[in-house]
Every structure is written in C-alpha cells, then in structure tokens.
Amino acid sequence: MQEQKGAQGAITGAHGALTDNNHAALWHGRFAEGPDAAAVEFETSIHVDERMALDDIAGSRAHAAMLCKQGILSVDENVQIQAGLTSVADDLERGALSIDYSAEDIHSFVEATLTDRIGEPGKKLHTGRSRNDQIALDERLYLRRAIPDLQKAVKSLIKTLADIASAHTDTLLTGYTHMQHAQPVTLAQHLCAWAWALTRDVERLSDTLRRIDKSPLGSGALAGSGLPLDREAVAAALGFSGVTENSLDSVSDRDYCIEFASDFALLQMHLSRMSEEVVYWATTEFGFIDLSEKWSTGSSIMPQKKNPDFAELIRGRTGKVYGDLVSLLTMMKGLPLSYDRDMQEDKAPLFDSYDTVLGNVIVFEAMIKSARWNTEKMAQSCDGGFANATDVADYLVRKGMPFRTAHGVAAQCVRLCIETKRSAIEALTLAELKAVSPLFEDDIFAKISPRACAEARSTTGGPAKAQVEAQIAALRAFGEK
Image 1 (tube, rainbow, N blue to C red):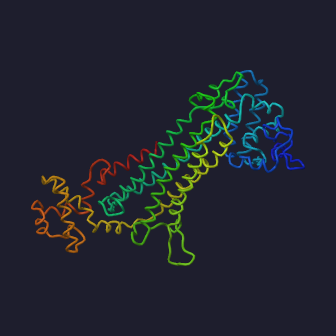
Image 2: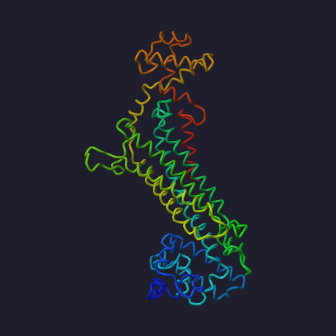
C-alpha cells in the first residue's frame, strides 16, 4: 500500500546522511548538512521506544483535539489528523504497517507516517509540543497500560500459592532461622509467607501508578508554551487526574522510572528468595519438592541429573534487574535541569526490568503449580534438631516458671540429649526430665509433638490451621480485587 511504502525508510544521500523529507530528524531545519549515518544509528531510540507507538498516537490525538478546541487547528485539519492517526494505529495493530527503524524515534515515525498519509495538516501536529514533554507523556501512558498486566500476573501467582497452601494446611515442615532448625510450621504457612510478600509488590506498583497520574503535556521543551494551550483538557481526555505543576520539573523528572525499577527490583528479590528455597528443597538432601520434568533440565554429561534450572535462572536474572535500577540512578544523579539527552537512556533499563520480572513471575507460577510435594519428607524434617525446645520452655511458663528460667531449663534438656546421644527431647524419659525440673509431667510429650507445636501457635499469622486458613482466604480476596 502507498502509505506503508512511504513509512518504510528515509532517503539516504551519497555520504550516508539523511536528506530532507518527512522522515528526516524533527530538528534538521537549523542544519545545512544532515547527520552522518553512523551518528543517526548511534542516537536513534526507535528500537527501544517502538513499544510506545500506540501511546504516542493516543497522546497526539488528545493534543490535536485540544489544538482544534483552542482555535489553533481548523476543524477540517483536526478531522484529517484524527482519521490519519486512527489509520496508523489500526495498521500497526493488525500488522499492515511496520515500524521504520531509520526514524530517529517513535515520535518522528508517527508524525512522518501521518504526514505521508494526510499531507500538510500532519505537519501541524507538533504545534505547542516538544519531544521533551511528549516522551514524558508517552512513558506515563505506557506504564499505565503495562503495570496492570504485571499486577495481574503477580495476583495470579498469589492465587496459585493460596490454592497450593489450602491443600497443605496439615503438612508439617521445619521452619528455619540461620538455615538451622527453628520451630515446626506447615507448608501452607510457608507458602502464605511467599504470597504476602507479593501482595506488597502489587500495592507498591499501585502507589507508583498513583504518582504518575498527572499529564506533563503542554510543558514544552522546559518553559511551557506561548500558545493558548489547555493542558487540563488534554489531561482529562487522557484520563489523568490533573497536570504536572512545574514545566521544568515535568520534562526533567524521571523519578517514576526509578521508582518502578525499584518496585521491579523488590519483586524480583522476592522471586529470587523463593527460587532459592525451591533450589534447596529440590536437592536430594532436602527432597521436599519434585519439580515437573517440563520445568527441569538434565545434564550433558551426567545422565541421572534433574536440575532446577528455571528457579536458578530466575534467581540469576536478579542481578540484571538490580543493574537496570542502578543504571537509572546513575544516569540521573548529575543531570542539571531540565532535559538532557542522557535521559533517552531511561527506557532501555525500565523496559528490560519490566520484561524480565513479568517473564519470571509467569515462569515461577508455571513451575510451582506443576510441582509435587513430598509431605513425608517434610514431616521427617521436624524429627530431631530440637525444633520443639521453645515449646518445652512455653510448657514450663504455663506451669508458672519465668520464661528466662524456662529457657535455661529447655537448654539443659537439649544439652542432656546431646550428651546422651539422643536426637530429640521427647526421647528423654519423664524421670530424666524431672531431674532437670520437677514441673515436668506426663503431658509434656503430647505438648511437644511437631503437630502440637504448630497448632499451639494460634496467634494471628501463626501456623495453626485456623490462622493459616484465614490467611488463605485473605490472599484469595486480595487476588480478586
């Protein structure tokens, strides 16, 4: 089609410089010579910002409508621009139009393609607008579209964890501190702990979305516009709650990129910690989890291997997401107001960290959903290791002994087991226990079984079945919000 052909590339001169046509750089008019081809390749951002094409078009449509309302565009010009932008968006969405990668950026591509299609009115689209406020708008529009997709994926993972937990409220598991046996819990409580961390990630993303709910368009290059623009009308048309308050700040602000990258880094950290536990639990030594063969790999030399590579890759890609955040912070740390070209480099790390985290959430959910759990091995982990020592102290506290004294008595019981080569306090006889403290009675053994220990911890958030079931219900409700 003629329009598509016109959007497919700029004319290149004998020395590799772009000549003056609709696809030349938007700033070329001041220069007698076009930029060198190598210079164009070095500065172009369209390979990164092409994902914002529809956002750029949405912003342009609202801008053109406002220009018409203000009498800056005629009604006919606005009609032509709106129809042209709609056709560009439709063709992009159905694959009838390809991005021209010789364009400097997505703004140049959209404007040039529009001008190819409707002629002179297309050249009026940029009236009262700079790429500085345009890109600040496009990024916000894109993030408003993209972040809910990530939140939806995280909520799906939360629901999956809650579903698995609901089947394992009675599955005993040793809880650890310092990677040492600590106290008996359940698999359900452990999975809920993972899920609660993810709820905070969803909420953080919502908080950051709230802070980008203002339109920067109309701020111009840095000092607003001498034309009678109606910034508030554009903001309302695009669904923003208002406009940014200062034009200098509007075009120099990239806090939202850094804040979202920080949100992504925290989410990735949670995924990494979860993956770390999966890697541990999949070892022969632990044997708590059996990952599906669909989400495991083998070895090129050792035929017996079944490796948790996907959990390891999620864990490994954490450095990439952290690096993206540091890249953004470093890029911005020394920039004077207002806009500097350094800020073109904001999109690559922002988009990369978003893509990485979204992919990791999806993969982790598929991996954990298809896994099988060795409940017998988990229950065995509660045997030995003296994970019930605190419950021995609690037993004595209920008998009236001060906790600090009870703590010492429980420690003496552990020492006695070690000296007599017994692996559990319950292996001691009642007579031996009474020799340590006369407060011990026959009921001590029932009170310090792993299941009794877990069920006794019925404070809010604890591993008692009723408490975990309440957590599961709350997590499911969160996922449905």
